[in-house]
Image (tube, rainbow, N blue to C red; front, side, top):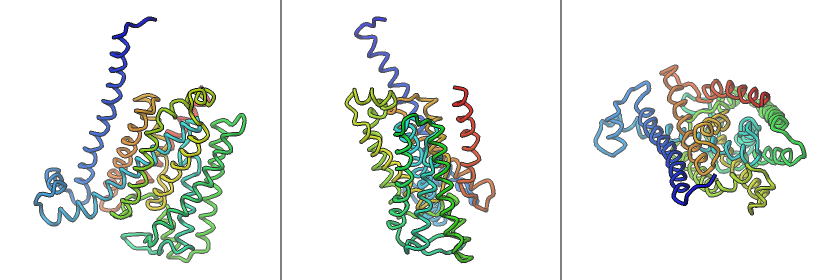
Amino acid sequence: MHFSDGQVPAEYRRYIGWKSAVVLATAGLLVGALITGISVGAAGIPIPDVARSLAGLEVPRRIDAIVWNIRLPQALTAIVGGAGLAVAGAVMQSILRNPLGSPFTLGISHAAAFGAALSVMFLGGGIMTSTSADAVNITNPYLTTASAFLFSLIGAGVIIMVARLRGATPEVMVLTGVALGALFTAGTMFLQYFADDVQLAAMVFWTFGDTSRASWSELGVISAVTLVCCVWFLANAWNYNAIDAGDETARGLGVRVERVRVTGMLLASLVTAVTIAFLGIIGFVGLVVPHMARRIIGSDHRFLLPATILGGGLLLLASDTAARLLLAPHLLPVSVLTAFMGAPVFIWLIIRGQRA
């Protein structure tokens, strides 16, 4: 079919405009969810007061304390953690060409959790306490993150080797991830076996993903790592599009496939490691959000990655807000909700893959 010179640019502008509108709409929903998440809770705060507090205007001291010391850091942690896990899942699905790829399903989250637990238990990375405020006080977050990153690299390295085997299918890679998850879960249980009662209680509680345990300083570390990795992922959006078309096609377009694949896995593992080290295991966000975004906005990574980043933050923030409200005034770990939500989606993806 022949198009005139003016027709193709107009269609392309509509293509770009629609996808950009979806990304902007997701960003708007995220802002609305942030203000709502700060407003609701055991102590309700009117939205105008939340806006005044965030703007630095005069509000009662109690409201300022709740907003700035409790709810805002928790909400921002949910946004950053969800964004990091979601974009890590999207990149893994692309570079491995595996629709079931994510830090959780491929066992990388469990590997990072084992590394963090090892640091906290034996390397002096944290003090194990069991209080109403915190299960773990991280005294050396950099050592904990480095240990989590090291073990997540081990898991990612195994996945990369399996992906390079001839005839490796998504099912084989997922089964490898299940095996890795079981292995590192067993390692964590081994550490728990030698812990005393207080350490064991704190250790089990720590493995539940919970955004409320992050302070402003920890949020800064997570945000810095997630921002750097997201910038790199967005800069390589064209490369991921080429890899989706096949390795040979990507090489023909000048993409250094192995370098892009290894770097992507390393950075995705880093984001996962930092998030797990501070927040615990939060499953299925990296699996569910990329598929939701892909069904709405398509597979063009120039738009899929921004939508996934915003959608991951929105999903985890909404889940965290719901978790705070379900059993108020008690706090339900957000990982419980993401697991209830993600497991049916995971099963549906497997069934759809078998029918394809």
